[in-house]
Length: 262
View (cartoon, rainbow, N blue to C red):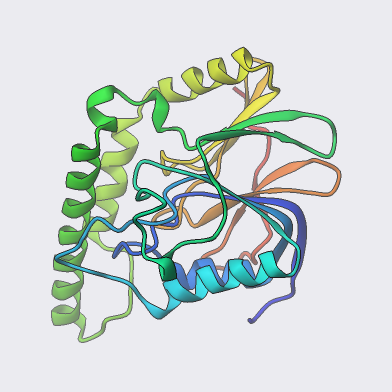
């Protein structure tokens, strides 16, 4: 652990994709070590175990789960919302799951009295995109492309150190194109309004954002494949997006977005 410890009321993290080749579990672990919370809300796609023929599970993946288990033993509360990549809770190997109930959504009460609908976010995708077959296919294509890219990178540079490559930038660009127009945000705000909430907190889209939209708050935690971000609630209920990148000038805990105009 290299930096000071920051304390939060709640940390919202999504799209860790532990078990996927693109997951930066090393950064997740260092972020968690430097940022402690009373409550952790894991907003889906925590595990990504769709590659039985091409397994990828690292010591850092184990360390992330061990850290969360330790925080739970110390009294922290952990909520786990299932995402479209998460396996059925009963089918995940015992060593690769957290012993907490798995939910589809929850209503989070912030310290300032605001209520937030929290869910993964895939519920607003087209039915064809949400299908298990498409999820598995997309996960396997991503895995194969990243494996190919890392092999080529080692040949070019003689190093296995992970860096952002053309293929990674392409995958990120395809994701941004898929959700152009931000219609998913409007749909999720509609769900929050129907639930009588003051906003929505989600994951899934790999696009970190915190803004006012139609008088309600839209917040996306981001992910730990591309954006390396998490959403934090301060003791007074204020929300902020945090970024955590290896070698970045900004320390963990820096406010990088705040109340973007809708």
